[in-house]
Length: 410
Image (cartoon, rainbow, N blue to C red; front, side, top):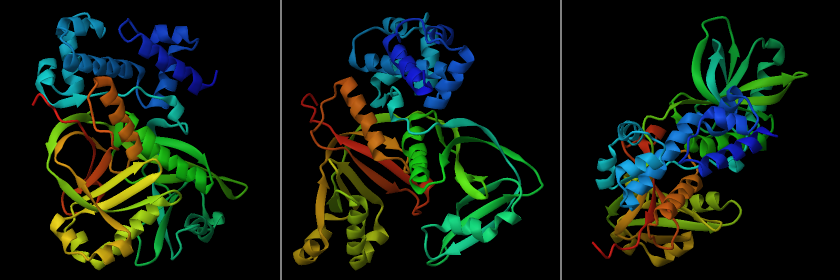
């Protein structure tokens, strides 16, 4: 049986038996694999150890019962597979960051999402990787398309010995940069990476990076470590045939929590497009409008993104008074509109600013459904906030918002 198929069967089995005794040994025996193979394959497919996955799924279910039922903590602990209330308290606090009673009284919600291997696009491996010392050669071009090929050719394969790596460099004016790193004698460094191997093809390379960032990373127990991403070249008959993608990672320090908060009204100038290249077209419309109103982008702190039914909306926060002073003809010629985020109660989930909002939105929808929380029949949207006046990734906070129905009981 292919690895992906049997791990999917393992995940389904775990979901059906979370309230029962579950051990890697029994699970491996049931699915006709060795324990070591189960550990290895489960980790490769999900980014979690099987024991941690079971523990977090049980704690997640316990969180729902604590918030949404009148069951005692003793009963919840027993139904979660813990023999004593003390061990339940200890694991709960270590996982969620607060005691069960504190969680019951808090407006924060913890939910660990069941993994779906059907979303898995490429085989991802997480482990320590040895990277040799290297020298860097920078290649500049006014055209980004094909810059990697041209950089490798310019270096000359006859001049290369040992391992070869590449990464995007810093753009200089209107010239793009690609850096080729070639192995030299020296100290070898070792770090933790999520890696996958793809064919040397533009579509496969793009899909590989998209999957690592947008799908795998957000569902795993890891987060980006802050080092730069890069690629390793594998050659055949003097030509690149495969690429190994390296995403530096570290264990996630804190789990994601969904909070329910009261938000003030916000106003955004947006553009909307649908179909092929909708994201690019909408972004260009907004940028064209901002060029006519440079003060808007200079003072902007929050940016809006919403996708639904093939529609892409994006924009920037503005003062509602600004809209009244902008001529209607100018707004219509740019295809620009105004959208209000009404004041009210919202479910809010923070995410990776690199990630696909679709993945985060699916998490939000799953949580709302499992907890029976009534919400407005409108799409969730993301707001990217600049926290320190800089557009570096570490200074950008992304939050997904879903408007809830008014609480009639106050």
